[in-house]
Length: 400
Ligand SMILES: Cc1cc2nc3c(=O)[nH]c(=O)nc-3n(C[C@H](O)[C@H](O)[C@H](O)COP(=O)(O)OP(=O)(O)OC[C@H]3O[C@@H](n4cnc5c(N)ncnc54)[C@H](O)[C@@H]3O)c2cc1C
Image (tube, rainbow, N blue to C red; front, side, top):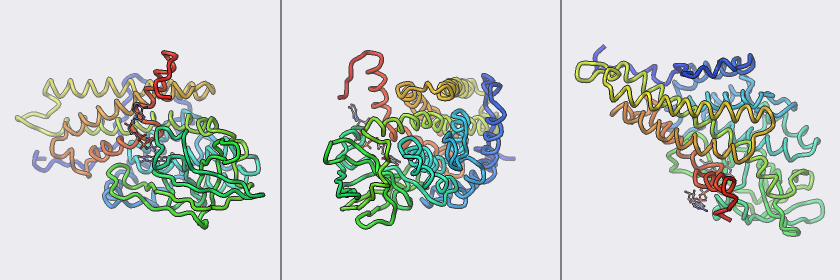
């Protein structure tokens, strides 16, 4: 094969990087799901992910495979959920993001945020009513917290909820709401005008006064859609108010679980970057030799591996803490901050190491590089996570 016609069609496929043998600790359940999702990613996701991304099209055939793989619902117990252990749920997110961040984000919003809100903050009746249909994807979920004027300070949200007998009336605007234009159930966080507390409401769409507009021109996670949402006098029955969501602290409980998931997502993107760079450098020849025979290339690969191994250890430990019910929001925040920042560095290096081929969608790295940007920002930016951890170690809050 000549260097001019290098076959890059296998790039992105898993190499199984596990330099510190962390996988020796996997249980049978972890292996089973991890391998199933890995196969799905290599055989079904990678061949088409770039095309969906380029067209900014939602990959419905891939999404429909998620319940078949038994991975919808994360660690929720019962109600048709996949009932994964926290560690297995993390591995599933990692593998999905190794293939396609948009697909993983779709699942993260639907299950990690929307289903989780109902599971953590809903009554028994509410869980039984909605979760089984969500586990099969017969009903899609969204989570509407962020507003045009409140992102990092979402605690200051302005959307209002006014009670009129057995009905609540919601007014306000939301922004960046994943699946917001196509979800059947949108968990809307709004402030009760009577007591000033943030409460959660399940808006069933279509609903009068609910209008969602897809945000276009987005160059990260292109095949999962976010929406601007207007709520103008949307009427929601009391039966759709999340019965155990009493204040913003309850919203925070949901977000704390998904912050850890972001660390696993970042690991998936970084793995794709490292493995693609390694595979490419083995085959691409310059100055008459494969790139891997140059010392600087080896050094770059080893630095990437060292960073990636650190990310893996972060994930294994937050997974263990989650399994023991001891994962604090601060520790999850440190893991998110560390892993999304490190993934950005690994992907930037990988992109460069593929030369011109690094900017082609068919070789995946540029897509991962763009996708990690959104993950770096959502569910609390790197800066906000830093401030949260900073408050914890110094005892001084620098942002409120
Ligand atoms: C692709 C995508 C999907 C999303 N999905 C959802 C969703 O499904 N549901 C939902 O509710 N939200 C969603 N979000 C919103 C996301 O959570 C917010 O974008 C995020 O919290 C940051 O808010 P912001 O974009 O308004 O940025 P801002 O809060 O305006 O931040 C801008 C910059 O200022 C920095 N900054 C903010 N405060 C401080 C401070 N005190 N000190 C120093 N620097 C500071 C930030 O770190 C950042 O660099 C999504 C966002 C994206 C991009």
